Image 1 (cartoon, rainbow, N blue to C red):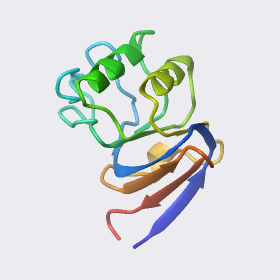
Image 2 (tube, rainbow, N blue to C red):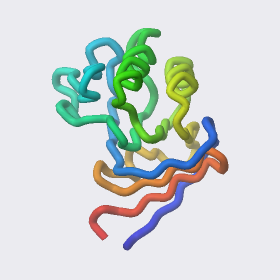
Image 3 (cartoon, rainbow, N blue to C red):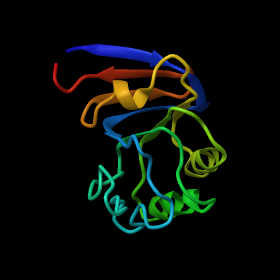
Length: 140
C-alpha cells in the first residue's frame, strides 16, 4: 500500500483516522450540510449527497458566512460529525468550527495542497499533535 505523509501545523490536538472526503471547493455554511443527516446538500457541490459523519474532511478553507460553524455544530449535536479536519489554510470560520467541534485538525499547508494529494476514499490519519497527515492511497 502506498503511504504518503504530508505536514503542516497541528491546530486541534488529537489523532483521528477515517476515510477521506475531499471538498476542493469547500462546503457552503447555510444550506451546505443537512444538520439531521450530515449529508452535503449544497446544490451542484462535487460531493452533494455524501455524508460527513466519521469522515476526515479535506477542505481548502471555509465558505460563506460566519454561520458556517453553526451547521457543523448542529450536525455534531445530532451525532453527525467529521472524525477530523484537514484545511489547506485556516481562516476564522474554520477555526471556530474546529474549536466548537473539537476534533483533531491539521491546517496551514505551505508546500502541498492536501486537496490535490488526498482523494476521496483514501484512508487518512490526522495527527493534530504533530501536524502530520498520513495518507494510505485507496488505489494501492
